Image 1 (cartoon, rainbow, N blue to C red):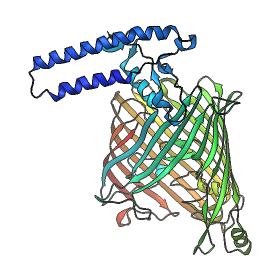
Image 2: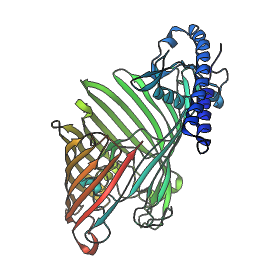
Image 3: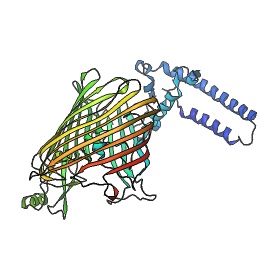
Image 4: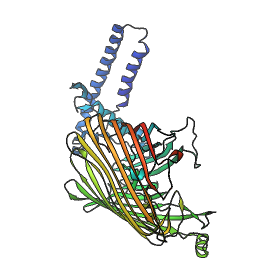
Length: 539
């Protein structure tokens, strides 16, 4: 069977355009047009000849290939295998050009230039994706400071330049089997000084890590060829509370393995086993010892419950793998005791019209994961704190209820929300110590007036209050509020899911109580007014 390449055709067009540009400084407009017309005519003849051969090829295609949809553009298989498989793959593209509403199409298959672009990208198998936020801000009293982002909200309250960069390359594809290598960089770029080098010390804003480095495959599991099987530094996808910048369900992971999207009755099943080591502190915090933990995670997701509504059930269990030094240190009391911990979640997501949604989450956690529920600044459900494990954990429990989403209240009004209530008993608090109880409530709402697809004006209102009670019964209060007025340049009307976005804002932050962290703004002030411009981009 013959195979036909689209790449030589693309090269002919490229050479024609380049040659026209190279001589443009010496030729008149009429001469340039004449040269272009001749080159295009030659290319058309070449395309027509290819079409005749392609029609013969199409006659030999099987029925399944004939019925393929445009997004699954037909692709001839190479006789070779392995890493170089893509370079041997060939296109089977129809070739007579035609115009339809001003867009160039290929007549025999009605492919648009976008189809061609998508096909080339798929043929190469490479994806470059990313995210970043950056911007300028100043305050009424010196350098602007963020406070309680995880409780008061992000908008007009963050001055970091976070980024993610994703490199994804398909390294094998044959039949229904494929393998893809993925590397994801994650980090922060300082926004304060003109010169800031990357480093890992506490005072350095510029940091970078490789968050993911793994191989994911499809078609290699005989019992479910549509499932994904991966190995490497990776974890199951997190559930993010977007307005508060933390994850309700997330696994910190070194390396591991997992299976995702297994067919399992009503929904899909994900399974993962990952490693996360910690530095275990001595009780006087003068030294630490590396300890190993492994986490088992199970998710049963996308269970349909209503029209547009689905349920996901998730569970994570973290268990220690102790060496003799650790066991001895725990026994004689020189080290804190590392204890197993669990996290269980039920997540109901209801979709509404125009892409709006609301997600409701109920969670229960124990020991060190419960300790992280009590953190007002960021409540990611990690097993430790900044790679360290410490504290006397006494099998205490914490729970929380979360609502987040956005809805259209009319043609011109959209409202986003993030609401969290959490409580815990007999937990270790990083602020008030062992045997602490806590109660916390945080609410952020963002109504916005939609001028048009590209402009919105609104306000974000945030408030939180938290009370911790230590082992002796003493209470400590932390609370604050935030008001942010903004105007946004947008590319769609969604507040949470449309990017890029440029935000012009003015923010007033007020510390009401600070008995947990004793935080103040510069000059011991309890409030701050800032103005700024921020952009957030994802691609």
